[in-house]
Amino acid sequence: MDTLSSGVALNRLPGHVRDELTDVDRLRSIWARHRQGQPRDARAAARRALIRRRVLDLGGAPALEDLVVSTSEEGMSGQAVSVDYVRELARRAADLPTDCASRSPARPLKDEEARRLADAAALPAHPVVRAAYTFAECVAVLRGLDCAQDGSDSGAGAAAPTTAGTGEDPPWALPWILASLVLQRSDYPPLPPGPGASPPPSDGREPGDRLAALVHYFARLVTGTLRDELCWAPASVPPPRVHIPPLASVTCRRIQEYVRSRRASLGLILQALDPEARTVVRSGGFDDTREESSDTAPVPASRTVLTPGAAHWWTALDLVVGEASLTLFVVVQEVGRPHTGVLAVTADARLTTPDGVRDALDISGADSVTVMPTDCVDDRWPQVRDLVDEAVSRAMNALTQV
Image 1 (cartoon, rainbow, N blue to C red):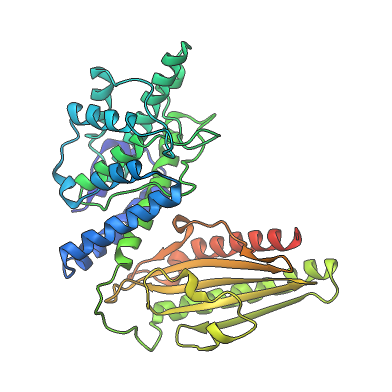
Image 2 (cartoon, rainbow, N blue to C red):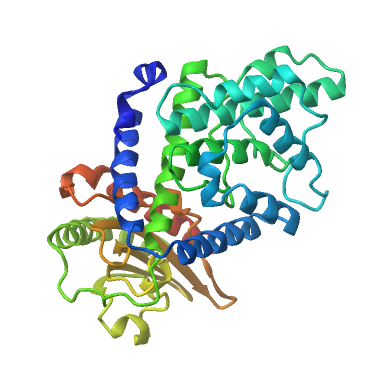
């Protein structure tokens, strides 16, 4: 079903956000076809394991894990987000122990508050728009509850779809759960929160701009979740192909040329710190044994591979200044086995100093670039270039601060 055409709210979204929703629909279609040949029980077990890992990474206690897992089962796609169910979820969230990495509602929801959230979950719009709007409405309601509990004026704070997960307070669990249920009712995979899962700041923005920024953020999260589920593979699958597909080949070549074009300017910066500084650009692939064995490759590109055993090809930028060295990998990889035709472009780097080895990038899976089978390299190149630029910037910042 083409859900992009539904909903009046979509008409007010910027063009780039509409394009992202089109991409989400295309990736969801691939995901829906891919799962048809997978054993349902094994797929459900893989989903539960992924969700548990996400909640654990978030710092969640077993009670939060149980709540998220129980609302993420495949059968939840038939669960109506009614007023009574909203109140039940709010009660379960309020019962979470204090050691969970989430805040609880300050008091039980009233009928009008629960109805506001149930109405948001029924917004006639693209599922990602509906999930983002439901999330924003839930955050607004919970902020209102907090303000009322403190005895302060809740008018402006409760009306605006502000963000959770910012500042020192942990995020609320309820907005994520409701947004995930909205997606599942439209036959999308559940959307568990992950580390650093904080929506964009909304201060100083008009309501329409805040919603557009939130839809953009949710589109990236949903893309990452669809890609995560595509990456699951049954125990017996064909081996990765030996020859690089044309789209992957062109994308890799464009990345190599771009990284090499950055090498000279990076070298000048590093040589100002150390005349003996070195910059080296290398490339290879999943079948290249040098990737794992070479002394010049302290960070195997396979660290970023989303589908275990899938074909991947990498471009590496080695930076050496004094006793510190950094290797940045930009990896083009196939997503899913058997092959789905989807590619992902990811980045990873580790910094080596006399004190040890540590990660040098703080780039989440949502920041990776997904390439569709029907794309040409020019379609995704602006996103790939931005990813490479951001990775290089963070790598240089980490290296020059040693």
